Amino acid sequence: QVRLVESGGGLVQAGGSLRLSCAASGIAFSITAMDWYRQAPGKQRELVAAITNGDSTNYAESVKGRFTISRDNAKNTVYLQMNSLKPEDTAVYYCKVTTSPVSYWGQGTQVTVSS
Image (cartoon, rainbow, N blue to C red; front, top):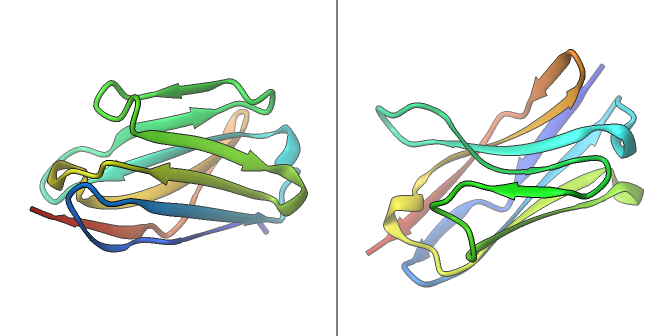
């Protein structure tokens, strides 16, 4: 059974940093594509960052230059390093793994950035 467990969220002041982790089990992690999404209260869930099994990356315009997605296949883990955080980054962050045509979601981790 596929499981994704996010961690690393918390409360941070504007300008600070957090590193999110998503540990996967029950799936061939090294051949999957991994995404980070976020959802703020009352808003649609949006794609923040993506990484392919070949380590190609893509980012939302709002986080380019501040966030970095990476993966460690040996540890079955994907990371999101978030620097220069803004109050607008406050949301629940979710990890998604895709082995086409099926996608799996983690439970989410809360990130709160104070002004």
